[in-house]
Image (cartoon, rainbow, N blue to C red):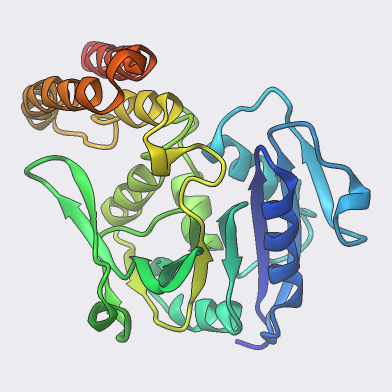
Length: 290
């Protein structure tokens, strides 16, 4: 697919250094695939001088969230250009050589989205994602992390939006990300909607990238921001009301245990963490009747 054109959207938030590295990796990636790059600035602290000349910055200091920022970036591309696929990227991700060529090949007929091995940005011998799916007992994603899982092309049930390529046709069919999700679970929702629409999800070992977990949101340290937003949208990706009610029971028990664990781990400083967890869970329960 040497005539393919990729529209790449990076969501910037927080420290500018990861965004600069991510941008450089996209523009310097030697694939033959043409590319257009937009950076959506959810912090309001990026300037054109920080990035390579010609990179468009969409300023959203109101911070609409990750999925809404990707949608805004896709909408900002020139309407006359015929994109083969889009790539959604966290700003703390870095593309490895050949990523775009591999993405173009992976998005064969019937494949709606593709992703590849995501290595730990601090230790590239470790995998953060090497394929995965959905654990329906808990309504959560499961990510393989072994070297053995990372070496073969295969269909998967879930791809993280940390580094995800989406067919332009599939994107238009499902209307991009659901903007009810501020942060977290928007990729699970997109994967499920693509699958319901009959699209396959593909893991391709050539789509290598690196990701420093929690570089922007503190997820590696289970920050209050992470806890609240991950918990808030737990049930939204799933359509079946009986199943969502089942998940409400499971996660009510789980969050009690998690709250106790936070109290033990953080001691006298646990208040903001537990409050964030409670707020998120109450919003999740409210979503069942909205």
